[in-house]
Amino acid sequence: MSNSKVKAAFEQLVVVLPVQSIIMQKEIQPSFRRCALYLQISASLKHVGLIEPVVVFPRGPNEYLLLDGHVRLDVLKRTGVPEVRAILATDDEAYTYNKRVNHAPPIAQHFMILKALKNGVSEERIAATLNVNVGSIRKKRDMLDGICPETIDILRTSPVTADAFAVLRKMKPIRQIEAAEHMVASSTYSVLFAKALLEVTRPELLVEVPASRKLDAKSAGARVMLEQETDFLLRDLKAVEDSYGTDILILTVSRRYIERLLGNTRVERHLSKHHPDILNTLRSLTSEVEPQKTKLIAN
Image (cartoon, rainbow, N blue to C red; front, side, top):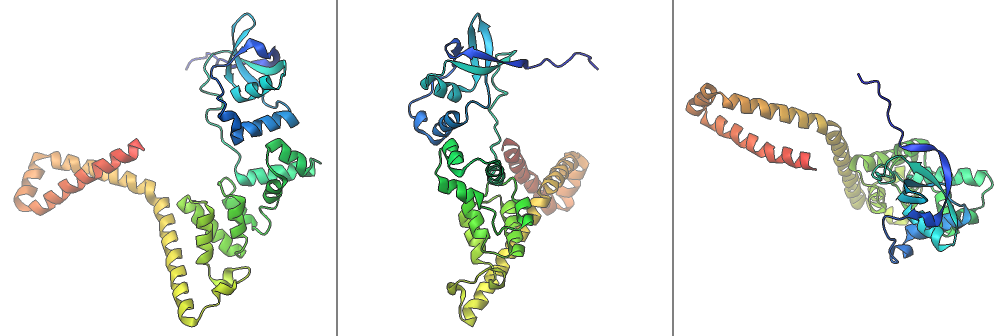
């Protein structure tokens, strides 16, 4: 085993550099300056300042190549800031920076807002920093009111919006948990899907039964059947998802075994003479499985 040390990708100290000494590798288009992301970053820099330093590579005397932070630097340049904090990289490779950013899911944003409010930051300042209205901050603040802890744990890393949680809030805790499991099983977190789950929820599992649910006996019976069928379908979907990886592995191994079996001339001759229908079926199955396996690998 080699004893060589892993080369550090950065210098340990953060330096302050003149903005004019940093060379950007791409130009920020005027259309991008009007998008929500740019405006949000601009508002954050205005109200909070630069939190994450830009990353540069020293290319020459008083000349630095910008690897990460093009939007931040563009905003700072346009506001007339003369200097910027920067991290010096030891290589000019930019692939490893913010190319694969994992954005905070809505539940994480909710807790971050609660923590900021607890620390004395006003709703107005949070809204100004994120370039959104105060109503949006309040909606995220109250997003999990009426949502049981088990549902929060299930959806903690999922992209469920405040509007979808507003739909789940109309269900009782046990149904919230079921709905959250259905969302995860189907990888569908939209408001429309939450509303669909609400529509097929039995009245006794709702916090408040709307007037439209007060149907006659015949309609109520049809709704119960629809609810049961939907639950069965979603449970089957979850079961398939849980066993999918194992099933594909078994299918691949079985196919290889059958191919080797049919590659034996004595076996193939015997099947061709005595069981031609079985031979044709095996050949058909192996030819059908191959394209599916290739498609899965390509995806």
